[in-house]
Length: 189
Length: 189
DNA sequence: CCGTCCATGTTTAGATCTAAACGTGCGACC
DNA sequence: GGTCGCACGTTTAGATCTAAACATGGACGG
Image (cartoon, rainbow over all chains, first blue to last red; front, top):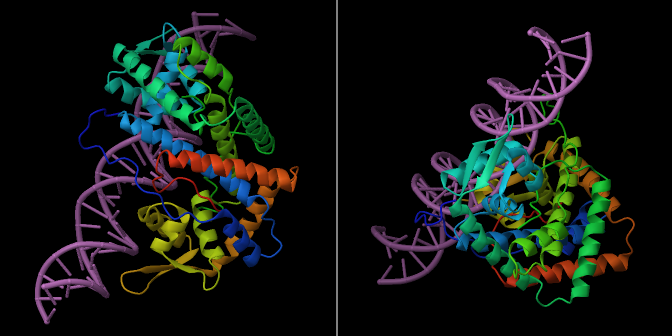
């Protein structure tokens, strides 16, 4: 993270002509008759939604001078509550990435003065929020959660619960058909 | 892509203890009283679903000896129909990645004998499916679409349409609040 | 006590993407 | 005609992740 780096690249730019999922399905049906294309529109919709959420999150974070990986690290420490300290392994488990990735994230955050590393029991390493990191994550978390809140502002509580339920059940169904490795989605904010 | 590489890494492994989204929301509410957490469960659910879909896709492709980027390239050419040839720019637009990424994807695929590059009109470069690539994408597309079909096998057509509709509308809402840059989701198969 | 094994962290190699720096056909405009 | 500038494609630098190679502290069994 380089908060005030003047060399920082410009924020995300304009949208692209998006190929329509139904056209894709139609193209497959035309080119490979007999192949099942019923899944194409929904699967595509799910992917595009997640991509849109991710881009929006990144855009918000870019404005705040940071990135998703750093927020994930800091917010995991913050949510853990006092004394805001976790080992590399605990972080890896909670952030759903490998320990190697945490090691690198911590190195970057430490370089920026946001966290501190100290030896813990045995061979463990404890990562603690530094004062600067604590102040930082407070701002970031509030901004991101408030931004996210806008995304569901127009939705009834009941609608929200139903949507969450559908998405969760579908996910479990998908996971049931193929085990999930570590890494990928950061569930938190 | 290295179809039969004996040095290939093992396929995706076991699941990880997943932090519950409601617990995350509760933790924020506890640590930062007043911050809105209503969005956390749904946003998390959407991300995790997309991650699950992605992992499953990757797992299927791993079995078939390839990867998502290559499939995206080959299937975009295949879906275009005869003569199965597109310029770098057309590919970039349809695959939703930068032209630089396409250049690299094509270099890899060309190295594997799946596509061929030839000069087109002006400064354009045309990428065409090589015979091996054509045969390959046929298998890949069928396998992937059939695997995806299982994911929606238990769902009524009407349910599917409704779900797609909700996801699409939510995505448009999200995109309306923050422009989408290029790159990210591959919509196709 | 000592050796084996396991869990933990870090480091490195490799993959892949974006953004930006380049090099270059071509058409527009004067 | 000549020049300018755009659009295209490639290349490079930098970011970030996973998997694997390492290194090491502790526990447990003999």
